[in-house]
Amino acid sequence: MSGRAPDAKPPRRANLRTAATLASIAAVFFGGIIAAQLTGADAVWIGVVGLGVLGFLLATLGRRQDG
Amino acid sequence: MSSIPHDHAGHGDEHGHAHHPAGIMRWIMTTNHKDIGTLYLWFSFIMFLVGGTLALTIRTELFEPGLQIVDPEFFNSLTTLHGLIMIFGAIMPAAVGFANWQVPLMIGAPDMAFARMNNWSFWLLPFAAVLLLSSFLVPGGAAAGGWTLYAPLSVQAGMGMDLTIFAVHIMGASSIMGSINIITTILNLRAPGMTLMKMPLFCWTWLITAYLLIAVMPVLAGTVTMLLTDRHFGTSFFNAAGGGDPVMFQHIFWFFGHPEVYIMILPAFGIVSTIIPTFSRKPLFGYASMVYATASIAILSFLVWAHHMFTVGMPAAGQLFFMYMTMLIAVPTGVKVFNWLATMWKGSLTFETPMLFAIGFIFLFTMGGFTGLVLAITPVDIQLQDTYYVVAHFHYVLVAGSLFAFFGGIYYWLPKWSGKMYDETLGKWHFWLSMIFFNVAFFPMHFLGLAGMPRRIPDYATQFTDWNQVSTVGAFGFGLSQILFLFIVLKALRFGGPASARPWEGADTLEWTVPSPAPYHTFETPPVVS
Image (cartoon, rainbow over all chains, first blue to last red; front, side):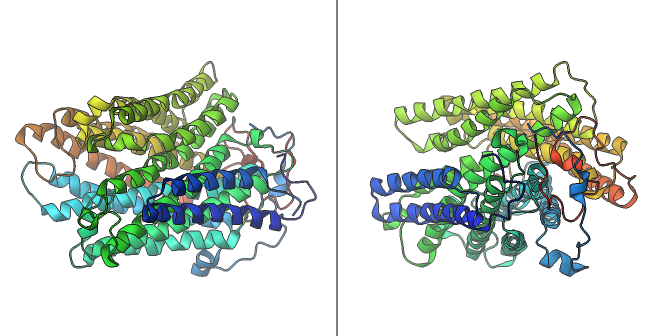
């Protein structure tokens, strides 16, 4: 977490990976809130929140900066 | 916070390739974070004036009891659109405008991570605004159920509600794209040596805000999608007549709505945390605790939503849980307020306009926070629910909170953005007029609320007349003061004296290492932060 290296190229692949993870979290929350209401099942709520937390961890900790 | 050992002014060079379209095409096609930041800020100011005009119409109607200038249905539309425009059209885009300008400059990045998506994020907004405002023109008028769009009223409302729902969808998509951009930029494009714990606090507050947006904007989008299908496709998510649950709408809405409050205030915290050390000529007191307090506020914001709906009925255990969780937020918020005060303590203080707005922010936001604590107490909240006390509370938090911090931020960074200095005397006039008229407008609302005046009504009992008249005078004074702000900015852009690269003696973040105005391209070669 020390920022990019002085000679680094723009980390395009890392950027796309981070963005894809964040976009999927948003999609899970959007679909999950509707699915939870449709099914009325608590498991859906818990699953949505769980996936969201895992996604955030993935986006923040699981990223690589080497492009 | 980061310190910069060397002068990196060379990194601000344009390297001879600042070619970009001229005229209107520059602004439509731009992928430059500075241009897009400017677009966001001007858009938000225009929407601020539109939302303010609606507010002044409301206050004119409320100058006297009885119906004066608008009918009750239109009055409800005014309150609804005022809230939606100010939240989604003014405050949030202004915060994104600051992020666009400042985040790359403060972390030493050449631009946002996804420059084209950045352009798209902004240009969705004017279309959403047109949808929202055009709802006044359709049969049945604009949405009139309050900015919360509560079911079942919103299920039954006219076509204006559909336009509002689509506008919310578009603004939500814009916010999510903007958040993805900000998070990716901060995580992947920081300058060498710029560890997360060396980032300026403004970047931290925006990183956390962006995470909040990713989590809650899809929830709002899902909610209004269900509302749309209830209205047109025969579902019954929130329609009690078909077996749905209108109260569930409130639960889901406020699961979005309370974090939304912090989405609007956390970037303001970041701006104030940048201004106060500069004009105190001291590092921010308790930087790490400020970061943890920001994260704590964000996490707790997901656990307090039902304090907005104590009166709908819930078990005593639920009431106690949400009451205590709400009170708990005062702890990290208090950490921030005490750290700002400790930063000023024994500092070499000067009181330029940005500092005045930052101090005004602390004073008024703390008052709004205290009335929030009052409202957190369940039995008190049940008495004050839907009264003007609530209106006073959230205007102290959002107007004197977010807006004052944004004014401070504009005065603070305008020299960097434009290369011109504003008129300091007029800036101070703007502050004092805003400060005085804001309190004249909103402090009496506490008395009105405590006396039982309900919100969202065009007519009221005669005993509320005096304070309503005072409030209306204050609202017009506050509104006119913002015309002075526009004049100050335009005067600075046209006639302002040249600004040096670092016009504020105590400023030590990366943006002050590049010339003023900041060149079109900055930090193409990353600076090294020690």
